[in-house]
Length: 112
Length: 110
Image (tube, rainbow over all chains, first blue to last red; front, side, top):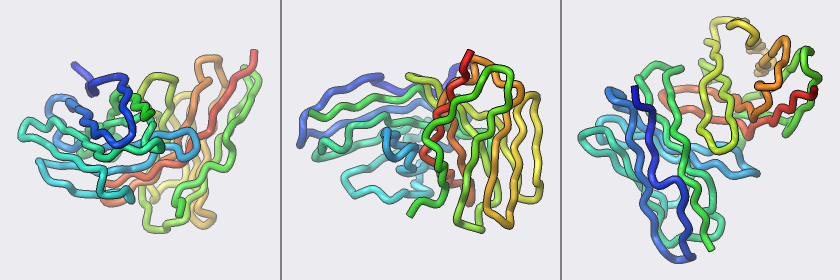
């Protein structure tokens, strides 16, 4: 059974650019959540999508956006990149059970 | 405002001894708690969970204790093994949203 796949694994962008990250959930999982991990802040919740609708949103600026497609794949977009956006971005898909979250290996974004 | 707090950034424990990782939360509406383990270059993996209606849940070497009145939970690992060296995240869940703490890095010493 394939796990959660995130692409790309690594990304280097310059300030001001925009970036799109992709997440393919486990087959059958309809919920996809995104998290940002930084050394000082741990895992911070960005947003959650379920059946193509954003169901929950964390406290991030509007530069961070996402969407989910009909096949449950999700993308996250960050516009006007800032140095502080450098982080590991993790995607998790869920069965709907509270302990059913499975994380991908993440996309390491470096903004220079 | 940090709703889930792990106040110890790191912890070192001798192999074979008990590891105790602590977590505090502020929101009394949380009704489900989880622990995740994370190795470098990998995503977090689910370890163990507990519902707010319980005060203890055990799974092999891992036991989670919940003290609702103190808004405190702890993860006990006994005996600790070298493969337990990782970052452990405490998380709380409510309404399909999971809030994580900042993590505690556990070092198991030989």
